[in-house]
Structures are given as C-alpha cells and as structure tokens.
Image 1 (cartoon, helix red, strand yellow):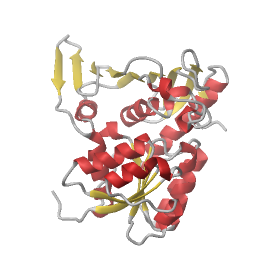
Image 2 (cartoon, one colour; image 1 turned 135 degrees about the vertical axis):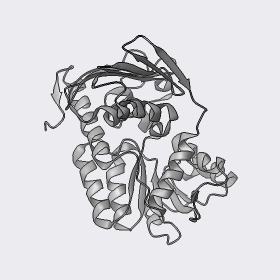
Image 3 (cartoon, helix red, strand yellow; image 1 turned 120 degrees about the vertical axis):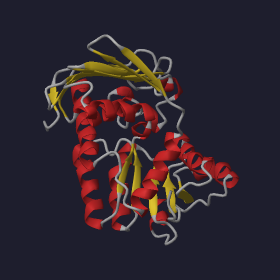
Image 4 (cartoon, helix red, strand yellow; image 1 turned 30 degrees about the vertical axis):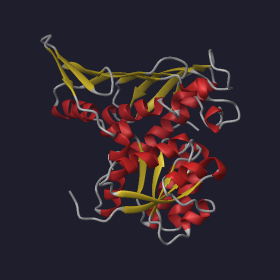
Length: 333
C-alpha cells in the first residue's frame, strides 16, 4: 500500500483502553504506527504490561514531548486532560491522536484545534466505528440518494461497563463522564449521526442512576434536532447487556445497522435487502490511518468541523441532563 516508514509514537495513559490500543497496533505485523514509549500516572500498575511488550516507560508526559525519537503522541488519558495535553504536544511539534471525546467543553476543543493548526501538526480524534464497513456502506446509501432526504435517525450503544466502575476511578467520575455513558459509548453514536445527518442544533436529555453503585448515571436518553430540520433519538445505558443499533429513515426508504457487522435496507416498494460484512479490526485500522494521515496526508474521516460539533452537542446534552431534560441549544453558553 505504501513504502512509508512506521510512525514512531508515544502513548499517554496505560489503563485498560491504552493497553488495548497498544495491543491493537501489535496485532498487525505491517502496522504503520509503532509505539516506542509510554507514559502513565500509575507506572507500577503498567510495569508488567510494558515489560511483556518491550515498551519502555518514560518519566511522565513531558518526557514523551522532549524525546526526539517520538513523532506523535496517542492520548488515552482522562477526558478533562485532553485539551491541555494536545496544546502541549502541538507546542512540541508532535502530531496527536486523541481518544474520544476531544474535550469536555467546546471552548477547550477549539483551543486544542487552534493549537494544532498553528503548529502545523495533525490532530485525529479516535472514532473507530467510522471504519466499520457497514457504516461506510450506510454512508454510501445516503450519498447515492437511495434513502432520499434524511428525516430521522435513531441509535443506541449500551453495555454493562458501569458495573465495573467505582467512585475512585476516573471512568466512574460524573465530572469526567457527564450524562452517564455519553463519553464512553453514546458519543460513538452521536459522531455517526453527525457524520450522516450534519450538525446538531438542539437537544433534550434525561440521565439518571438506577442500577450502578458508583456516582455515575447509567441510563441516558436524548432527543436531537439537526440543522437540516431532521430529528434523532439516542440512548446509552451502562447497566445492561451489550447492544448496538443505528437506524436512518429517509424520504425514499430506511437503512439500519442492527449491529456493527450488518446493514439492512428497505425501499418504498417494500423490498428489503441485507448485507453482512467481514469483521474488521477497527482499532488497528484507525491507528494505521492516523499514521498515513501524518506520513502521506491522507484525509482523516472525522473532520475538524465534525469533531467540534460532537463536543458542542455533548456539552449541550450534559447541560440539558443537569437541568432535568429541558431543550438546550448547542450554541448556548
């Protein structure tokens, strides 16, 4: 595919997800991204993992930024730290891959984007579901006009993750995870909706804790209004069995991803077709894509406008949930 050398990256954050990203890159023998250093706030907990994978531990995030062997940083750190770390990485001339969400506030997200643009480094927000073949096929149906004008979208992403979190964990913190499962799961669906429907202008959200022991909402439901006039509904639960669905209704038919590997399409004539897709390692794929975005200037599938739109919408969702479910405009401050 390319003769470019692998991108040498440092990873900040070696909790469960940081370790998952490291292993995703290692699964691909032809990976275009190579993790050469790691930094974590709990080095003792990550020592065995790093030793087993011959991954040296740096003495903190700043050490990654002054290491001449590192061209890019991958952030798998708490959400509230992203914007500051991106700004510092950009000032050091390092390209950045940041796990979703880009930031918890639109103001922080804009400052991070501006820092990268000023420094001339690439910024990629990690939404691995963008690489699902079924999702790309859904985008193709919309682009071809087969669904007609998009009218409404429904989506849900759920799982039992909330039972694993405690108040001592940042993933169990309501400050790091406003509106329950939005930062962990729901934002993937929100990003997919923005990718196919455009920006969100107004939301109304109800979010509450019903089942988990940590101080974290586990049941969240949201109504959305898009700039196009289309509507949407999104749910994310952190205390039930794993579930995924994305369903788009158009003036000429509908298309549904009942899971992450299938796409069902129905036209006005009542004909229904279904496609199944081979499994894809979306984490390894997105890390490769990030490397090629840096090396060969490949376009990143999540545009800056879309990344900022998802942060703005998520911030509005948190405000609406805190206010008892009232409608909130995305641009309101």
